[in-house]
Image (cartoon, rainbow, N blue to C red; front, side, top):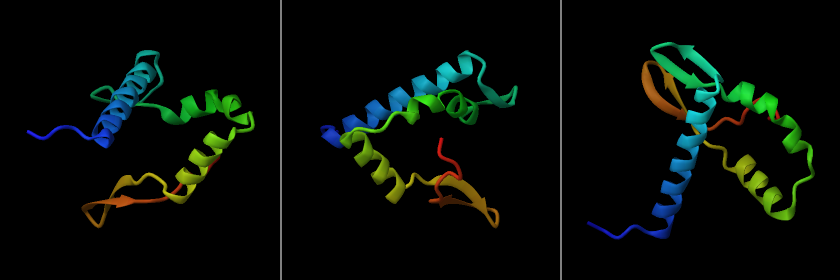
Length: 94
């Protein structure tokens, strides 16, 4: 077994925190999907906390925003019946 790198530990920390946030959204009722496949309703959450993002960003946050805009996360999609990835930015500010 190999020793985890700093990037491995950072990725694990991010995954853990993201999973906690997703669970919390579901636990407080911000749900979409079917009863057998509940999903966190990130769109409603984003709309509810939009005021947080009205504050002008500091230099570090601005750097993170610019990185996100130039390297958007990929979204899993199905193209012609094949699992694929799409690197499209959200179509709104939140």
